[in-house]
Amino acid sequence: MNAASSLIRCQVKIREIALLAFALTPLNGNSVSAEEWRYCLGITAQQRIYLSEPFQTPQSYENVERTFKHALDANGVSYVVVQCPLSETAQDARQMRAYTIQFNRDRGVNIVDFQWRPAPGSAAH
Image (cartoon, rainbow, N blue to C red; front, top):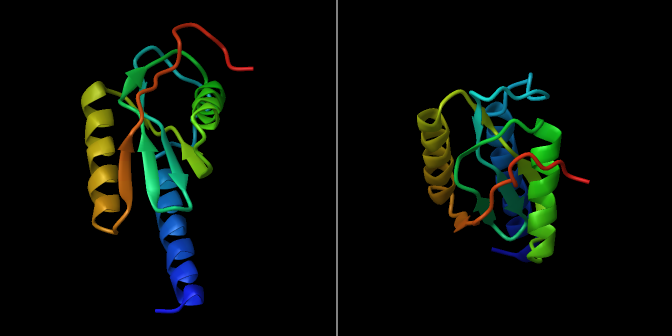
């Protein structure tokens, strides 16, 4: 396989992963109630996905995503896509995360457990 076809395969995989992440994120993700759960993921061009554990937060989707991006940046992770899918329960969030892991492992993507969760009550800058 030459470098050009390898790059194309990588770009297709990144697109597939981004589409999956988008599909798992509700369209009304702008507000969060105390009952909703999330986990975050950052997709890199190097065939890695950085995943947080599920967490519950009253912060907006935008703030959660922004703080996750800052955490990835602070750890030197160069991401292509960041998503924080929404779930109504902790169990749903764990199941969605487990599906994301299996889906990507089946496609040869490396999974990295990223120890992160948003600080309670803090807003991102």
